[in-house]
Amino acid sequence: MKDNNKQSQEKGKLYIVGTPIGNLGDITYRAVETLKLVDVILAEDTRQTLKLLNHFEIQKSMISYHRHNEDDKIERVVELLNEGKNIALVSDAGMPVISDPGQNLVKYLTQNNYTIEVIPGVTAITTAVVKSSMDSTRFTFEGFLSVNKKQRKAKLASLVDEPRTMIFYEAPHKILDTLKAMYEYFGNRNICLCRELTKIHEEFRHSTILNEIARIEQEGIKGELVLIIEGRIDNENKQQINIQNIDIVGLVTSEMNKGMSKKEAIKSIAKKYSLSKNEVYKLCLDIEVK
Image (tube, rainbow, N blue to C red; front, side, top):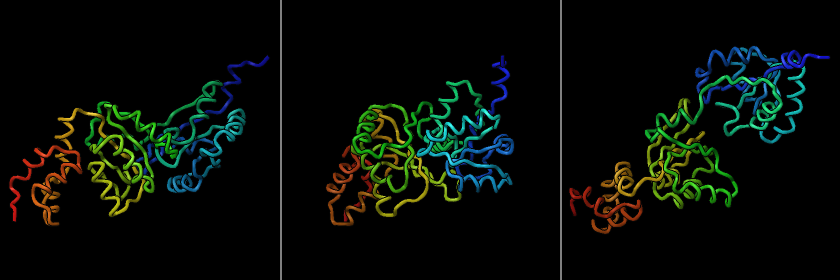
């Protein structure tokens, strides 16, 4: 009769390995050593992972493992583990499983008593929130919104009264539609749009939903994005924070240069940015009427 404990020990181990989100220097020593140690690497995109492996002079057999073939590959992964092979699961960037493939595999292996070890690394979530200046004491990670319009609207509707800072992932070709949908449900909240984290062109854009819509419509946008939005706050505090993040004087002056009276310009800007006319007026006292 076989010793079940011995049989379990002879099985391979799955390593969940965090990889850099941009700057290759952010990989940990432990992650590099693990990738050198394992027999096989499960890669979301083998071409992307090959660049990482080549940089650290690692040569390993890879298996393509992405959201479209995840369930089909679980059986093959189990076969390899049963043969005693050690396997690393990586995503294109950051920690696997978080808005990336791997959850179904981890769930199956956990339920069937396989050994799993996490090799932690950087994540876009924490990298973005700590520099965003938004409230990081409590926040909720919402990942990617559904491409299905009905599901997306239902999700946004459910978050209207969420008091915590909200973090979303979004693709550049969808961010404009996403911001417009968010304005419909959240109003003109303060946001931080984080772009190309840890890369050469890293950028943190502290703005409001409406300001960023206007900017993207005019300039476009490229790169991987993390969108951080303030949670629901009371109207008085919201009024104060919104005004701090908007060049009220510049906007009113611009409207006046187009032919509006000072009173009309103040009313227009207050309405456009969901602000109090009195607060806008106070900030514009020094604007001279020509």
